[in-house]
Image 1: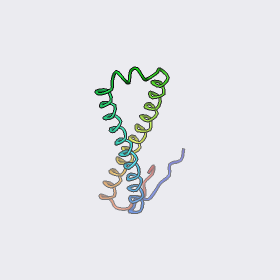
Image 2 (image 1 turned 60 degrees about the horizontal axis):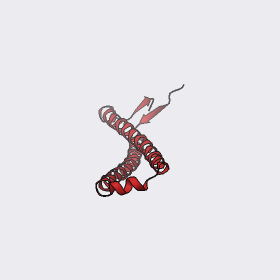
Image 3 (image 1 turned 120 degrees about the horizontal axis):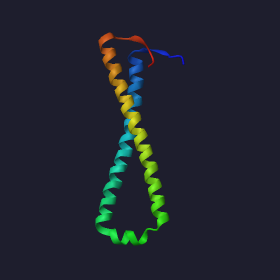
Image 4 (image 1 turned 120 degrees about the vertical axis):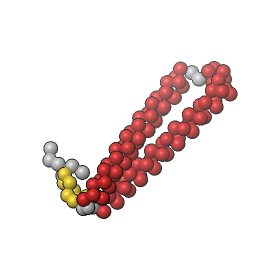
Amino acid sequence: MKTMSKMLNEEYLLKLADEVGECAAEYKMLKGKHNYFKQKMHYMKQHNDEKMKKEMTEEMKKEKYEKMKEFHKKLNAATEKYMKLKRKLKVCLVIYEKQGPIEINGL
């Protein structure tokens, strides 16, 4: 596998910062959705626990579990991507601050 070298300059840093911003927005949106549903379920359990148990069939429980599982996959992927890009940006900023524009392999 051939590694590509790229110029670590202001243009690259701005592009990377944009990517981090987009990933952060997606991550925060999914995290907010997660917290909302967590609070909603907590409320539902406190107030409608018996009613919920009676009304939910096994198929509905499976469907709900699958939706939740799929959502958590998306959340985990978004979290991982965001954290990875954030670390990459921090490293690139430190390198750029100390050495200025340089060509780096594997960016």
